[in-house]
Image (cartoon, rainbow, N blue to C red; front, side, top):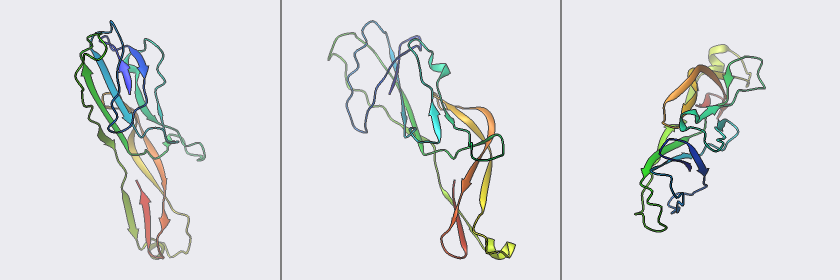
Length: 169
């Protein structure tokens, strides 16, 4: 959870789990905006590391660039990413607020694509096939708006059997 004051300035980051109640104690902060970013601690993306006073508009989750490939502008495959936001009226009195539910929604999801007959089509026994997915934005803002330049991302698949090549995208 990322906590911002009424001016949109960063106050704090808290860890939370699904269905966990979190008590907020930020006196004299006005209305608090709470942003949830879930499942973004993988090796594929980076979340803005805010400093005190940074504005929420500078926050995003961005794909990391793939360094093992010679191609430029190729990024890692995104993980399933969930985000949400709610505003809380901050009374400044401990225990005086009503519980607020923060809903999170899937903003990036993965699926699998199955390619049948790939070896037969290319008349090869080679097992080394890759897929390059084009024109995905390299980041998403805390308000769930895709941003940044369009990039490609690389996904490696595998043969489930001798005929079906499955690619997780």
